[in-house]
Length: 472
Image 1 (tube, rainbow, N blue to C red):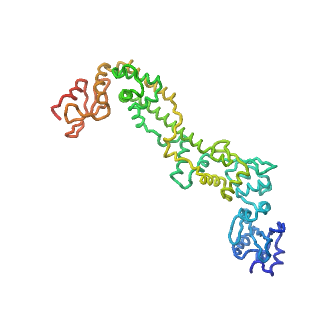
Image 2: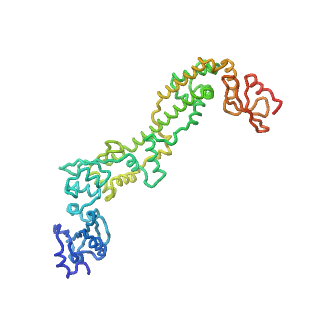
Image 3: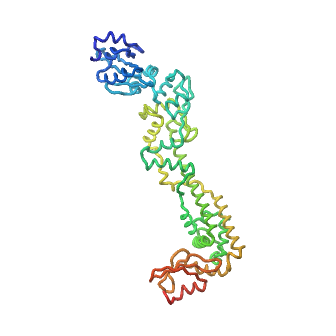
């Protein structure tokens, strides 16, 4: 049968109950088949039947627009089914209660009063109108949390409910994810990266040991020494390279001398130098982590201030009002979505996405703990000075050691040099043995390509350098 069949009008009226009627609109509760057949638009009849008649607990309602002739009235079906699920129709399309309220704004209060909705936006509207929750109670933190996980609490303003204060809560990871695309692995990994820094879990340090070791041997780390540590280093230099360290030595003006000294003490006092390198590496990493996390806090904590959402505890707790949240849902066309979805949409529209910290971590640096570093440096340089000055067994003959060191330093440690005599050979200085006063070399023949380990005292080293050998 067609909609508004005259033969069904009488029985339809008997099977319907008026919920609301202001002369322009009627809301009817339908309690029989004739009522269903009379009012239901033809194009949605099958769908309405399945939702209503096949669910014994469902209730069927109609909004009837009485501004149009009865034979051509606009009728909007509403079905309240299991667990108070509301299904509505606009013309021939299934839609949401939010959209129906937009079509009939004058009916918003009566619709909110009679049809329960778990939409965050709907709940905000109910609070704004002074309505109660589905159990007839004033909204509190418990009823709000059932609607949206981001709700934490509410302070109701009885005189002006729209100004009621809403408290929001997020966990650290949840809040961070607002600023990174959900399905973009390149950027999404930044969240886990930041969290790992926050929790102190780092798979790889910013600077590996070998890099810091190179910086020490090249003399760059001397720039982080305070005056006390620098003077102790110079004292060591006066023992090992007395000619080079005569007079006033400064950094970076005497960087070549300091590099030569650092390279040398790295070979003969490896344990002490290793302690210095490890301390620097740890403190440098800590400063870089601090720099990233400080920028994260500065960049994300107050990003929603301009939208009326303010932090009480950055990343975790925020406050706003019912009016502000409701207007943001409207402004960003996010009715029917959660608060989390709304904030993510605000980030996208306003280009508030976070930096790629995982890739650009060198752009951020906190405060290097120079005091702790120099305490360790001073302690280890004292250990070295004590060995040089007080332990007769460390240098068998310091004078002879210095002579050999002076000869060796013209070439440098840990690199290949050509033998000056003209022999087709190269040599690589590994170290000087402080107990035997012999230089340890690797000698390579350019003819055969073979390597040979050798040790020379000062006289033997000079003979090797300047006198051709009988055998290649």
